[in-house]
Length: 226
Ligand code: FE
Image (cartoon, rainbow, N blue to C red):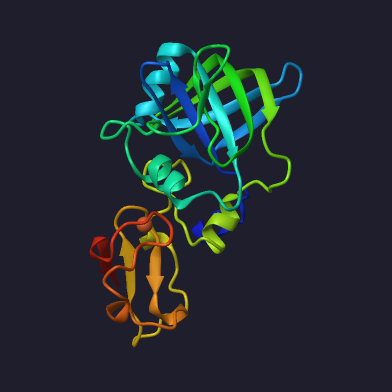
């Protein structure tokens, strides 16, 4: 059997993976970035083929990774996690530096960054797995803790978007203490679920200017789910 809840026990970090040039670049939030060898230091980053950043990584043969902290601005998570660079310039107005390969490195809410040169690309059907060799890394802020996927899910109540390698269709999850008098509402932008059973206020009673605590979408962007 496959119990999909078991997959939530796997721990991950959350990072902004970016690529491109000074003229045009993009980034996305990834939890599937990890070190694969120590000598030489090589890292893997999984990226959906539909992801706008994938084309920049292929063109430049390089990418940067910004490690973000626990209190990262919801706008940064919304911008990089739930919006497409095909629609907006995600890097506009941010604190960006450019790496040795020329790729953008996002410094907002960043505690450390890495820059990697792609040495291998593995086609894993829906995604590419880019293997990158480390060419530079630096600590930006040593006072804050890195954001983990678990913290993001449990404390900030975020969910993986459809493009993420670790996305799980909710219909595959078992019924967890369903109570008929409470309803659930899902943010159509980020997947955050407002569960009345766990809140003090019914969704309908929330003020009109209430926004999604994860991505900042408006109340009208929520739909009721069963
Ligand atoms: Fe949201």
